[in-house]
Amino acid sequence: MDLLNALVAVLNYIIVPATAYGAQLALGALGVTLIYGILRFSNFAHGDTMAFGTALTILVTWGLQGMGISAGPLPTALLALPFGIALTAAFMLATDRVVYRYYRRVRAAPVVLTMVSAGVMFVMNGLTRVLIGVDEIRFADGARFVISPQEFKAWTGLAEPLALRSTQVITVVTAALVVVWLFWFLAKTRTGKSMRAFSDNEDLALLSGIDPNRVVAVTWILAAALTTIAGTLYGLDKTFKAFNYFQLLLPIFAAAVVGGLGSPIGAIAGGFVIAYSEVAVTYAWKKVATYIVPGWEADSLMQLLSTEYKFAVSFTILIIVLLFKPTGLFKGKSV
Amino acid sequence: MSFLDASDMTGGYGAADILHGCTLKVEKGQIAVIVGPNGAGKSTAMKAVFGMLKLRGGSVKLDGEDITTLSPQDRVKKGMGFVPQVNNVFPTMSVEENLEMGAFIRHDDFHETMEQVYDLFPILREKRYQNAGELSGGQRQQVAVGRALMTKPKLLMLDEPTAGVSPIVMDELFDRIIEVARTGISILMVEQNARQALEIADMGYVLVQGANKYTDTGAALMADPDVRRTFLGG
Image (cartoon, rainbow over all chains, first blue to last red; front, side):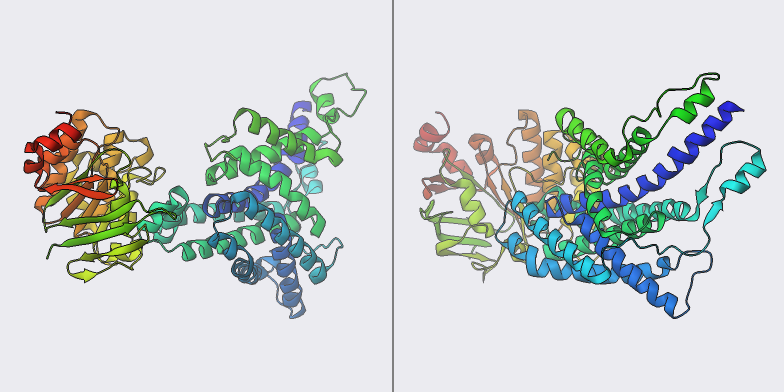
């Protein structure tokens, strides 16, 4: 019984939340890796693009709610998502036209483009705050739980609760669908293949008659979709706060680098590596330890790092990977 | 009128000219080879023909049409195929995807052309689902040539196709190039292995310092004592 309780505690506090968080990071890292692979720079504006896309989605959600439209047990934000994506994509394409296109034409070094993206980051940062403010916003509606903790306890008779929130299930299912679609798109469609060719060997792609402007545009649209979906899922699962999204930049980049920049499968693996590490390192293991070793109570919380320091986990993993395996787990490009 | 007529090409990458009135002509279905010492401007001459280099003087005509001002992409549409010396495949894409990308500008059904490429290079059919980056040097060159053939070019340009492959593979590649020429495609090729290349060449151009030094049929150049002594090692 104690072992079962320990297992449920691990499931409830680590596996379930980390899986949802990992899926969100994976989507974010996919966007980073796509931009790195095809446009050849690290996009620092990624976190704030997530915030911007989510803010737009929230505004549309409120609009839909105002009109009395809802998705029943599902969050209304899912209905608003396509609008959020379209608006964000339009914004990204406009940014490319006004900002990035010039630097591509003068064949600027990747580090210059990265600094340019930092500038874009500050602009989007401000824009998001003007648009929706700095406060924490809860916009999840619909059914709250798939498995509620009280029901679970009553049903199993265990001391430990297990909660499975509907936003967590939605996150994982949506992320899985998006990933399957993206891989199909890259592997099977003419446009997807031309994007991979462009990423592989730009000069040869140009010789083959692949239109670079089209590849760039499709990349921004995909990045807009991935960021908006990732941001909205993160916001549904937790809450929306512009500053938190800016901070997500670090774990997202860590995920992309751990997996190997430019490798989509690596981005997904990296997302989960970072998420599980972060949650496991900041979890207080005292309760689980008490269940596993009967008759012994730890003096401390058995927490390796307090949650305020969770970003240190991403940093540490990032540094270890860059030192020992700079191309990442799935042989991406070295930074 | 030759099929490819690149006359008096003068130009270079920066302020200094590399090509000084270089002329290259290829007849339909024939093989022309550019040889010469290192730094003679062989690759530069070929890049000039393909439009990767801005010319200060001279003209490039393909099938009678002046294409001097066209971009490389537009020249591909006019019927030129170019195989660069290095980085000439998409390494993380399969052999078949490489060929598909070669056919990117085509909107008709290209599967027949793909079959022809597979017939020409049977090893590629065998490795069609393998990534091009995982193949041997000789096989990769075959992918590169196959990719360029996918647009059904009328003129195929090869920049040192046998660089870094073993002598056996080199002979095989030359055999394949002859086969390609037999289908009516003109071939312009830069070669480091001058002797072997001139053996299969209908026309040979010996470049020195960006200008034509000797121009004759491959056999005549092979027989010329001057050429033999200076460029073919006796």
